[in-house]
Length: 474
Image (cartoon, rainbow, N blue to C red; front, side, top):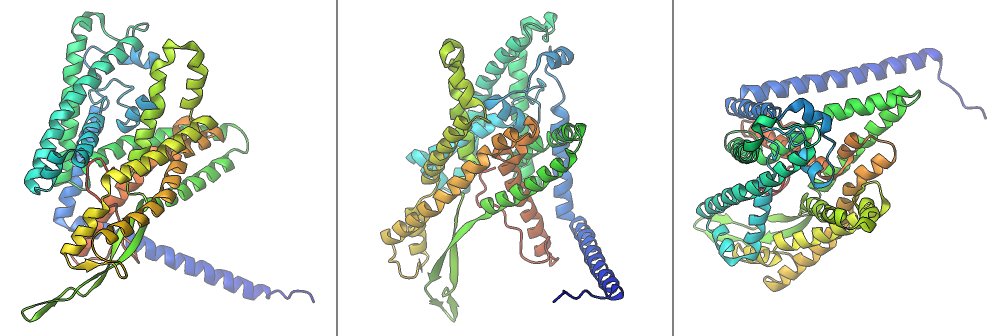
């Protein structure tokens, strides 16, 4: 029996109704967006935070284009190449200031390195554990030790950077000859001062601005490379006929990867927790059913950073063993299959190791016991710690596998024809940091709105940021 079609007039009416419905929804979305912006701007405290954050970011970006004393930027640009490995990671975090020999060339990386080291000390050294439990006073002591260590790390990295610049400009003459006798000392002083100034700006953004200042500075440095990378990819695809459709497909895949990273960052396993009822005077406390959120990716972006450092360490010995050059080139090339396999194994291993260092089931079980909380069907104390640890082990494995997949996605994208610079936004450290920082910032904005009885940023649900507030969480 042939399929009956609607009359032409009826089809036209349905099409017009559908277009009208889409137009109404679009108008409501646009009105909601502008109303949210008006609500944000009407809150004086939130407006001041946003303006202060934008001011600090502007100063940071201006400093990224100020060359070091004694450097000829034109000759340096002629001899400079795109950095890879750890140098590429530093250049990405500094927004290109590393390759431009800027006063902010080292960026915030020395502070990040010092923070990671101090954070590990708080897990491994009893004295630092005691300081961490002292509350605000202990936190101030730890921050002060972190600043001292940052100065030491910056001096070491600045010395290595001077050697790198001297080798890079030895042929092109990028260092002004009249300034050469003073270049080593002046560069170390300026780079150290620049890093400490960036660290100060990050702390000020955290105190008076919006979001975590250190993470926000790193995200801005990463996003600074996005427009140029986007235009390079667009021009590369539009040169050849029929490639513009491929570019649109790449953008759609990138959006899907970003959505997947959001799920990875926010994914939690909710463990039910009950609290015993307590009667104090005429009031009842407790008795509520809550949840203990265990993150699928509790280690954050740290395993990827550690894996990149481990993978590129062997390149130091490349000049001493010519027979090993081919192997070293293979494991440091992100498009090589052996690099992907080794990189994934290292990421998975570091995910379990870092999670074991920062996650303490025994401490969580003790806190639940002290607050009269218990997991239904599980005895308090050590059985609760074992139960939480077993759940954490089970959810860490898929989290580690997904994190390894995100880490090798840039290599897969480049192998499929995406330009090298644009492929870095398809995964890896850059994408995870951007997703996490943006979620945290949006959550703080939404909290300010809800506190003043405005609607949230979304029509349904609430924006959820990452747990933890450590500066190295990124």
